[in-house]
Amino acid sequence: MLSRNDNELLARTGPGSPMGELMRRYWMPALLSDELPEAAGTPIRVRLLGEDLVAFRDSEGRVGLLDESCSHRCTSLAYARNEEGGLRCIYHGWKYDVEGRILETPAEPPESMIRHHLKHRAYPVREAGDVIWTYMGPRDTKPDFPEWEWIGYPQEQRGVAKVFQECNWAQALEGDIDSSHSDYLHSSDIRGRPRDHAPRLETEDTAYGFRYAAIRKPDANVDRVQYLRVTLFVAPFYALIPPQRRGIASWGEAAYEIVNHHAYVPVDDENHLFFTFSINRLGSNRAGSGRDGVPENGYRAPGNRRNVHRQDRAAMKAGNWSGVQGIRAQDRAVTEAMGPVAPRWKEHLGVGDLAVAHFRRRMLDSARALLDGAAPIGLDASIPYRELHSEEKMVPTDWPWQAALDGTPTATATAS
Image (cartoon, rainbow, N blue to C red; front, side):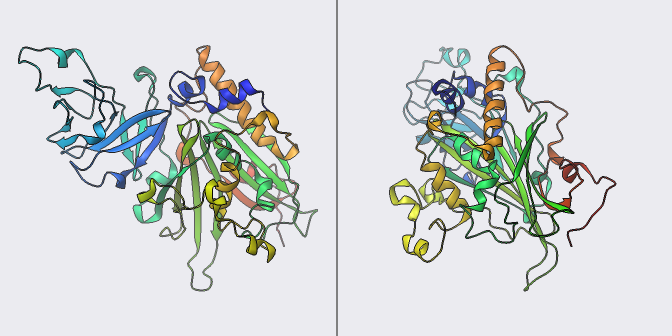
């Protein structure tokens, strides 16, 4: 468990909070490109790390991300006119470009210099992989943009989706680094894994965060092979989960290798955006990307705490484990059911929670270190983001688990 103070430190990401200041040192996904489909279109509200912002694509197609409150009298720029290179506030006509420069203050006398002495808060943006990213930290510490593997794939091989989830970012991310829950929560949906429900767990710190191995005994050939699932935590809020594979065409379906990267981006202390970035390395992206967020409903999913995530008790009586349909919906149900911020001081962690405890320690240590002037984890320019990957496979019992990601050792064996 965590103390109440540590729980607050982990969960709170608003301006001035230690974890919030840490989060602001990274490039983060803010919204999908198709949320701004046209130049000079409708501005949209965006809330990140407790800050209310407005995103827009100007008449030249450039994207801006500005403080929502007009610098003049604080009305919302989500109501602004999008015209000729900037947003014009409908209240008094002040106009801003994508960098926050005040272009016009028409209600001021011609000799007024106010616009030259002010600059509206604006955050740098970058559009890549059908996503609009932003950096909200100090300009002099802006890191290189992380060139993730999936960004480099052709559009027909990748997919991106987001869902607004009603709980703190950390408790949702913890589900992705908790291998043992899949044997229970997802047992009605996942088939073919070994029946060993108490895997041996190991973690290894890295420059980007850490990697985590769940090592299970197979149902046969226990003396020869072991079943590995290796997941990566990449600071500050990414989880790279093992790929889904079909090696040969079957029942009319082409072979595929689906890779999913997840991001849990804080909206505020009690909500976050769950992004799924997926690629099919072998062809067009036939995999669903967890597209259960409805754009017309603020990218919220149909299931929520108010309707008990549409849990079907009749299905449970008939043999379904959770009564919630779909793996992502199941994960969302149990994490949102903890409440807006999980009361971790009530927990009693077990051996199976090794990676969860390790994640908390890494992030808390990094937030405290930043207060003391140390560099955050995961910002080393040498980190090969394009090469980071997770893995799931049978390997010989004499393999170190790291070999499943880093290369093939000389010892060989088969799963047969």
